[in-house]
Image (cartoon, rainbow, N blue to C red; front, side, top):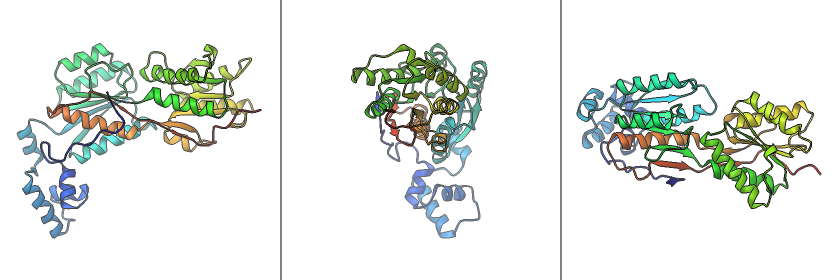
Length: 349
């Protein structure tokens, strides 16, 4: 298993990319793209500099010719549940930028969390003109993913829903380590009754974050109270209900750890309804560090997932598979980081 930073590929293992050409010519990727597409808004000397590098490194300026010579189309499919979303948006952005740097095109296929829709979309991508696919939080079971793999279609799973199967290319965050960081932060502030709004049972992220949560409590000599763990959908209304349940206990928690930012924001709403001040009466921590974490009041302490980097790494792995290059680690886990803001403080005396 690889984790944390994965070194980028040397620029010329295989064909030069549009980014390689830009670096060597000392110009932006956009400038190279304008030159290759014969746009008029490029200075003659800049155009000649770029074309000299192109000629020296054998970069074909014709997409069709590049496709014929490589047997590839330069098109990559990408399935994801939602496009305009604070969680999936950064992953999509990271993947899109990585594909742009490689002069690749993206075929976007939103699934809306519908299993049959995703199966149909992946089938279309495989039977169509895409060279491979990035599957973000796929709905497919392990058996379905293995069937897809057996058909020789290159794909990478980013943010797996189920525990990542051996032998399938996968990119994830270090969920357990991140949850441990969040729980340790609350323990260091003095909290001892910490509630957890977990995700849906059986999800990889849920189970890994529970491992980290329990490990931190055990290291502090605190027994896990099952009443303080409430499973929930990942959306804010469910977070409100889960927090209501925790805060109605005879001995309620002084802190709540939401397993994503949405349910943690739900806990903020629940506290407000009860007249509780965050963080004076109740501390709240989230997970993901989406854009929402920095704009709610109070600003949310959260565990940052490297969402954009997960998308970029998915593309990097996929290109290795498509090009038949060696893949040293089929499963890559990227580090998480605790971002402390305004929603956590020592428990009330």
